[in-house]
Length: 115
Length: 115
Image (cartoon, rainbow over all chains, first blue to last red; front, side, top):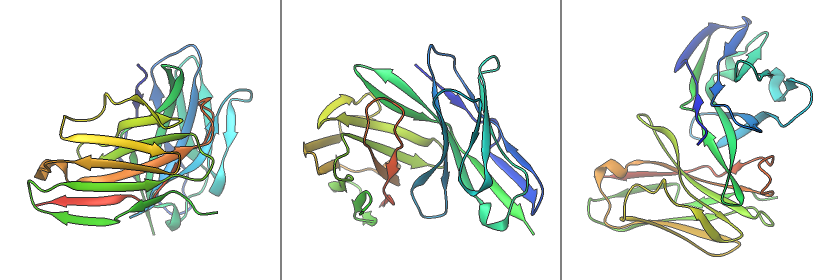
């Protein structure tokens, strides 16, 4: 079964500084990878996804992620963060099982943007 | 378009009582997922359905938990009897495609507190 590891449970960063949130997954024949964001008291929303093609994926709110097959990583980056980016971020992978796909999430990284 | 609708948003109950959480997926979506979120365990997949059929319920904690999807527009997650350790936020999510590339759309969650 697939697994997803988010190495940092919390990341504090000052406003306008760059940030990288790390994600590693267990290897598989084919992998679909996702990043979701959760604002307080809300459900998760899709930030971006990697399906195939270019390894650099751009998402909403200025975020991007790079798929690295050799390192089985899918790190999320933003060159300059805002206070409004304070939220929890989840990396996820989809896994084929019994004729259907299911989605496995990492434990999340809480991003705290400081003024 | 209405998103995934969950009810109730908040539920406070006493140990031993039955709890029923409800979910209405987005119209036309053919996959539905139930997740549980806690500080200790993060986001756990409990069960998922494809075309109303349960595919994998291995994440259901124990026999006290049950889930049904009687039709394409409605699903329930029931806990009977409830225990304090069941306190968590329960999310329902739906997806249009079963290819693993589709986006998961989450409801706002049902926050359950068992006293």
